[in-house]
Length: 345
Image (cartoon, rainbow, N blue to C red; front, side, top):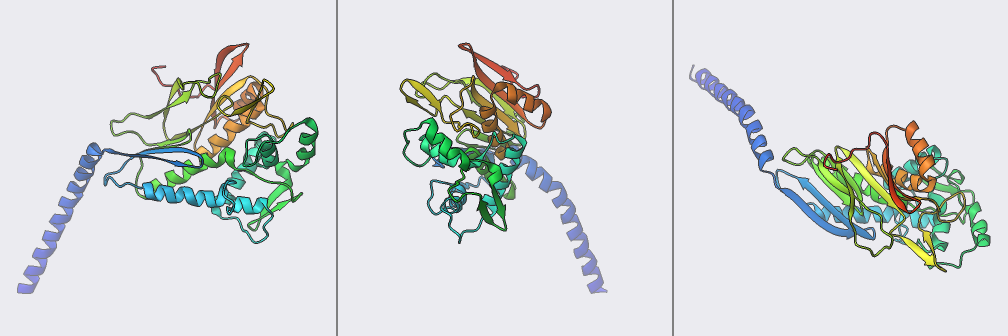
């Protein structure tokens, strides 16, 4: 009888403790959530800066892990790393195989290329190099040289099969630069979520991913830069944008360009002509569910120009865009109907 009484007593105590735990744990979580301080850090990677802010109940700092993630990405998808997967493919190294990062970026690139009819094309690397926007010295470019390189451009001339890259011409090379920073934001976001972090803002060279909210309940807010006449002009804000579980990527021609014989050449190369784009669009900011998608389409719209981009956006309502263009010397704006602007603007 003694054993039965003690056993019943213990079970009841455990039951009471469990009930108390059910009540206390949510209260503790709410308390922690209210008192959370943001964890923030900055660094340099991929030839630019990164800035990350998130709310963590345990105040963990993951900067070391972030730096490791950047290095892993570069070893897969950076043309500036000689031993990366992409560089070895560009050198026709038959021993290299695509890893998961390479496959993901490649497949998204092919998807966007197909949907934009080649306005986005990762095979422009030979042209990017000769124009001086890649990893080689600028060449003296003329129409003859461009015509000689155009046969090496065309997303439909490459394919990835069983982790091997196949090219119609071995001289073809690919470049992920127009999509890399966006995908890096997505990778960082997945890492933070794997650690139970739901509220964060990630900025890699101006490509931004924002999830959740600040602890005061407000949305993350980011800025779109106002285009300037010269690359070294002081930076200023064109407009503020709230990010609610979305990504924002911007592509512009006003910071990266070259001047030759008094003429300014944009870093955005049109895959169809082989020459830098020459139209009125100065900057395109795209909002999408993920940053890789936003990054790719921002570049595609820069190639398309204003009117073609507007037509594309009417048919693809999963994207939103804010386009700044030169209207006969006047800075003008066009934005899609669903593009979120700060209420104060």
